[in-house]
Image (cartoon, rainbow, N blue to C red; front, side):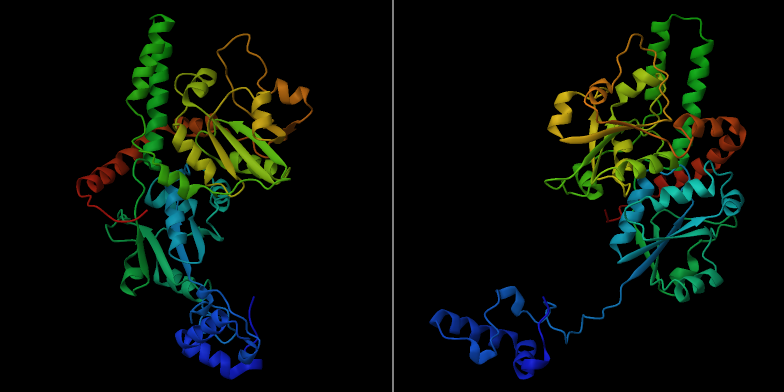
Length: 424
């Protein structure tokens, strides 16, 4: 609580300019049992409040401290936890994060065709917990005109990018101007994932599936080959407990909170996932999301799924602003014990789901919450699925193979010249 400065001006000036002296006087008075009324009825505050920078006075130099606004842009195509971690780091460099989403035309000119539409990419970026504002159709390069617009209209203090180089087709640095004016800050790239890598995984997975379908070997032989081929394009991401904590809200539900539970694979995290999570969150006060294990996803969708492994998918879900907590490796069936343990008020599921389960005679995973009257079927706002995203890449196979070949060269060069960069 702020304290009135004007009524005891000489006292507060003394406390402000000579905090240790006045702190000592007041502490001595308290120990001797003397009245503090002489000091204007101030009372004895705990020691931290005696510091001149504690922020309890009206007349303070930090009262009108300007909030630092930072800007980071990107294509954010095939949004993944690497994008989320980059934006998390950017937010740590300021108070408000403004994100520019590069236009389709600019992506085509500089990188090749995007997989996701502008609308889908905007939904993904807006759904991240660290993002405060979004600018649609941002340019790929920071031009002088756009930089001035950022500084003057959007009141941006710093422009942020990762330590990996971002070069234009002519070989120049896309952030050269921001660096020249001293308004550029760098963050550490998140290793082990990129949109190029994910496109490669999808193309490899489809290629392996075609080979498997054309094979004349036994089904058990096919399964073995599928597992072998899948291991050839696994993620190189090394999950750590620190990263999970950085993405987590670190808050549990309140004593009377209505806890909503939704589960799924959440593979190739897309706009459909964001929208269904948003709707699920609106049903209660706390959204708990169960992310199925790789084995469970493979059993119900086929050996070539998931594209992203468990920890990658869990981080993508945790980064969503509508999610409060995640069960990493949730069971397929929602049991009564699970409902009681997490005190679930509702168990929900979307109308759009992709389960091409090869398992026969399987029981309904939501049978128990249905029998308890707490199951809700939510209308999925979008028809997009993991499979439909993958099919876009397959349908434009040649263009993405060419795009990946080009990007793979720059990725290889980056890793060959890579040096240690401090950061989170």
